[in-house]
Image (cartoon, rainbow, N blue to C red; front, side, top):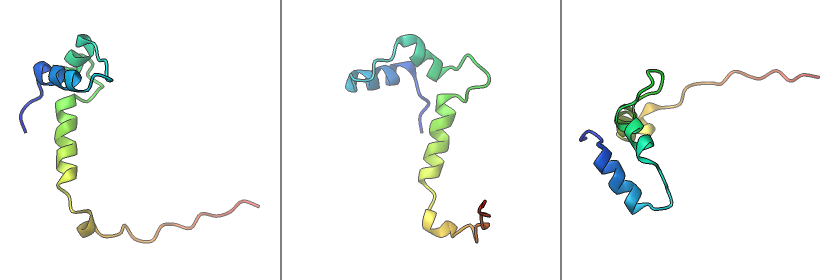
Length: 71
């Protein structure tokens, strides 16, 4: 996957006019200024990896613990 650029995000905003994102927010997606927030490109890479998973092959997680009911 190619790296996300401000220009590509700007084109997306133009194609989806109901999403009115200011340029400053687009810049924040391309190059996050806050260390706590995951960068948008890294997020897209993770989503792409999840989309390649065959969920049918992962199997069930096993028996879920029984929840005790309160009287």
